Image (tube, rainbow, N blue to C red; front, side, top):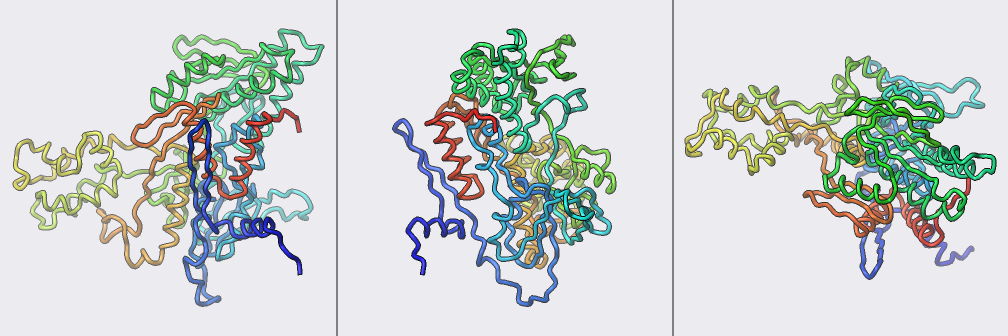
Length: 582
């Protein structure tokens, strides 16, 4: 009998049972320590196996293996569903680290995890098909797919999948805003393949510039890197590229030292405009000191093979910028299959799929949409104001007392999240304070509101409605929320837990989705990161960089990914980044 060594036993245990224990990573630097902690969700034992194997299982089809789709699959625990995943890529990619892949700080293999690895420990079977969905037929509950494997299929590349529930999590594509030349001449940074192409292109530029036959003017053009888009992706890539050049490449290509230039183009007035103003100012000043040329108010109108044409937003002046490599990282667009589906269901005039607060596609009860491909069409308070009043007015007196109002306050706030934002803006603890303000010095017990008073009191609430950002954080939370809804579908059918149905009877099955913002990071290079955390807490510097390391290591989907990413960071600290063109 084979005797396992200690290391073999540990390796086997971690490989076969990734949720055996908790991950504890301790980073210690400059005399200080930082702890990162992550715990895999248990997948076994939460639900009993279906009592009868012949019992019909409703089929759930998931389109996409990005943040939303993978989060849904990881958190789905009810074995009473038959699950099939359809995606053109058979892995999940940790996209926030794509800028690090472009310069070799992290290897591409370290941030991807096969989707089959993620679902194989489920207590129910999950089928996966590497294919692209090119048509959704909601009326007949079918999707039409085309295999990603083009060869040796004997003409059987296309197939049809039936479903009971469809979860659309296809993400979005890059939006070029129909700018001429972008598709042909710019690199994108949306997929792992994009990051690898950029990495090769950067090395190619340095190799071309080192050839003896190239003139000095041509060298300057070749080593001019243009980044379009001053959002988090564009800023982080610019910072990564700046570090790669100054810490590694100038040592290997001393002949071109001093010729490298990085330009960041942003149509708005500032970069990182979704961050706190303090972070925006710090980032712009840091880039200026580091030699990154930040051009705000510059909109790209055309990209040719060797030049980028920009329009100054204030003056309308058109100017040209010679470049060697350009990266386009601004805006997201809807995928063709989603655009076709939107036309089918009467949403052809929208930018993305519209869902309700429970992530159901409007007009399709059995279809859900998460992540970048969809947006929640939050219902306005003023649309339902008469129904809310009628539901609260239990004695049908035509007026609301404070007591009657208090009985539906929680349901109103849960159903309409803009209410909570409005109260926060007004610095009030609850809706009763808002009512008291509208009635002046009248005693709370004697307040009575007519329908017109009620409308007047809540007339400004809808001004706080906001669309959720298209981020990995939002998509992941939506996937987790929807999986929990599916896990409790049967239970909540019998015992609804959502808010009152103001336009109907009873309660909604589930509480509506609520996004909880956990903060955001903007790595700025030179081992400095800007962090904006809940409570308007802002931190900038090396301490935030180590917090970034800690959070991103703990958020990886597997032990393998965590170990590989941390190893890559360690390797870079010791040996620098690899500049080989593979």
